[in-house]
Image (cartoon, helix red, strand yellow):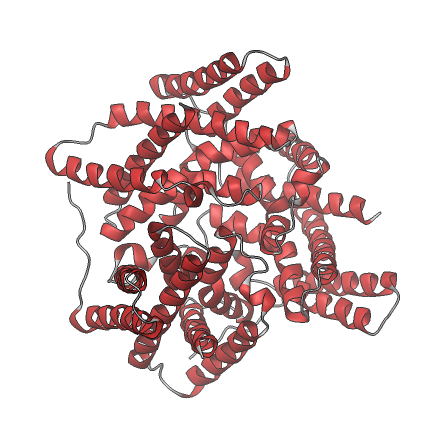
Length: 199
Length: 199
Length: 199
């Protein structure tokens, strides 16, 4: 079940990466590269840092297939229809929530300390977008805009707290997921930002 | 034999990285860093993602020696002569072809699925230039210009198909190599580009 | 003893990363990300390339705690006082020297060849700042300004030479450290630069 949800996250992030590439006027190859990097970059960083071998998309062929289909569908879509930006933002929030909590679960299962679990979950959720922005030679959006990675952090903390007090797994998962998605969607709806520090 | 060809690829890519650094007015250290990153960045990403240990240039001292010599020779050359841009482009195409096919061979030998073999070969061939451009804070050329990584993909597919139908190894290698180099040189000669997607 | 010195280096680099983030007007999350990346990026690259598992800040909780405290202290400081840039430059030079020599020691202990030891030590010392600049989408300062990574290289060579001629460990360590810190501080004091190559 969760594996299928993860594949949904891969597809959403691939679409978001492909749209960013199209907007930056990259060529066909660049579109596939950006879609892949956005979809699997975060999980790849997590697996490399945790020395999990083999990396998830080497072990399992489905993520790459989902990326191929999602990218082609995105390219086809933009030929016919205006981009459904609002639907994409909502789907991206769900993808962030899925990846953040499942990344935290993976790190927790390997026995990492709580701060490392939070970091790994956040990296799984927000790392793909960070690498995407690096490839576009711009300061990653998650570092100076919106509540994005912070939504992931909030939800992972909720998940981890419930997990540590022995709450049932579905409850911990659901509450964590809802916190990430809810915080992210609220941030979009109300234009919330983290404060900037001024000297 | 192949090992020596690989070292030729390292030298060519080191020269290309050094020239990019000189053009960007980096200092002496920056020239060596860019030469190294261009020459061994792709293979390093491949080895890290495939969890091959130790990484090829830690196991074998020759790549670093070739980078040192190639970089010094490039620095000396530009003091005396105009840069032989055409010769360098041809040498770079040969380096791309060598790295793409030998990277694919390495991934195939570790039992990766066909799409992962294509990705790893492409990363081995084009990954160094990608990291070089990241360090120069510009959108990697391979994402929006020329047929470069796509030439690698085409040749790796040829190599893999021949390999899967039990063609003799030298034939698969030679055909894959010729496809990469030929596609890349044709793209340079005729100014071929991949299409850009427009909404 | 050395472990505590390393933590001092982590704190100094965290402060330097946090200041860079504040200057670039990143939000609170961005400040923590840049502080972390600057403080542990170099050692993380070293551990990934050397396949050391688990990575040092996953094995040991103290680096992340030091980063949290160092970043909060930096944020508090800039509310009240002008940034003590000179003190920070001196502390950064000491951090560079600590990380360079301890990174070289780690690589040497795993049996790497001399050029790889120099590279790994330099990466440990200067890699964090390099990744920090990548995230800020600018050409890394160490590639075109100042004597920074080159100070690390000089000191590691001194350390390694003394180590190979069986000098006592504290002497090799001290001489290497003094060479890095001294070269770096002299470069700051006298505005020394590496030459730029002009065709």
